[in-house]
Amino acid sequence: MKRIFLAIALSLGLSLQAQTPLRTQTFTPNIRTLQIGIENEKYLLPIIELNGSTRLSVRFDEMSHEAHSYSYKVIHCNADWTPSDLSTTEYLSGYTTGNITDYTSSITTTFLYTHYSFLLPNNDMTFKISGNYVVIIYEDNQVDQPIAQACFSIVDPKVGITATVRGNTDTELNGKVQQLDFDVAFNGYSVREPATEIKVFVRQNNRLDNEVRDVKPTYVSNTKLSYTNNKDLIFEGGCDYHRFDISSVYAAGTGVATVRYNQPHYDAFLYDDKIQANKAYIQEMDVNGKYIINLQSTDNDDVEADYMYVNFSLPTNEPFFDGQLYLGGEFNYNLMNDANRLKYDGTEGKYYQSILLKQGGYNYQYWFVPKGERKATTRRVDGSYWQTQNEYTIYVYQRAWGERYDKLIGVKDIE
Image 1 (tube, helix red, strand yellow):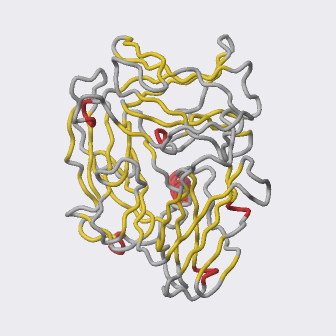
Image 2: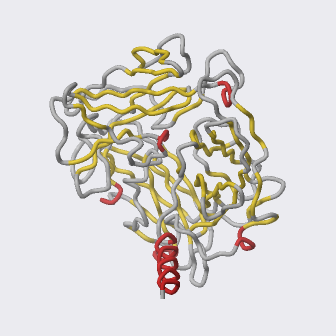
Image 3: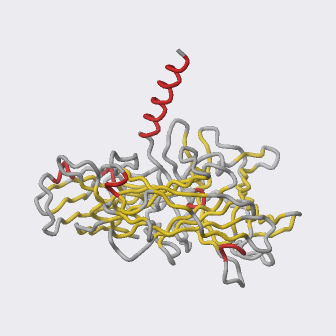
């Protein structure tokens, strides 16, 4: 009876897991600075063309100099990032798994780590079809116990996308929100039933919490889909990201009040942030939440950049009792969890958090999540402004009648 119950529970657990959208994240505390992006590019999203010459670079650190045997596999996903029903032979050519053989130990750092990296596609693995993908990284052939996973997309461009962002919306004029309008032109590409075959997903600054999924067009024709004055495409304008530079331990960079050596590691203390809500918009230079690994006076950031604890501080007279406050940005894969949730010190009268980060330049925002909700807002701390320069990414998928997966037939990035 126990075996039957265990089998049912395991089957139910796998079923529920299969319905959960996959996200870029790590699963063990010894894996840090997981990055996936375009090879030799710093800020581009992990999107490449099918059968193109561009490759993806996957990188991460394991916090020791011990030997580890890491491997990876790639799975194909639907438009909503749940695993598709395709077999590996339907979307991969060559091997279905790979070993990570490119690794180097850190040099003269207070935190020991080993840097691992690999490229996709490669001589052993190439892709047959477009769509969303997730690369699963695991140790000692334990595929069911991943240490990390990273999401990317492969596009086979078939449609044209034109887009604009404006502050004039149906809800307000040049206030706190932005309206995204765009057209998807078929350009002679065959789409028999546009209203049912096409799915469109939109992200703002690669965020997951406010992603718009399967948005419906406001106008449909045989040549294009129009998404104009669509209420689902009204986004909070938000604010420009805060930024700081910890590329040196000898001098405090942008946003850093002081750097201290607290044996055996370094601590970087950022300047206290202030609640800016309802104040006038002030433009700041940012990279829409991204970060870059960088160490001054070296050519090998991957293994010479050190780790240090970065200390954040937001003084307030009292905590927010109606929700939780998080630090938002790519450094935490745009997720909201205990790793970036701020704590409140009643004695000091401030929110605070300390996060172990690799040397470089970072962006972050204060995200407030009201009780009972999943979508974050910047209005509580940083404010929201229609003038903010955000990055919007439009993903256009197609699944015609009888097909078993979502093709990615267009991507548009607009700021």
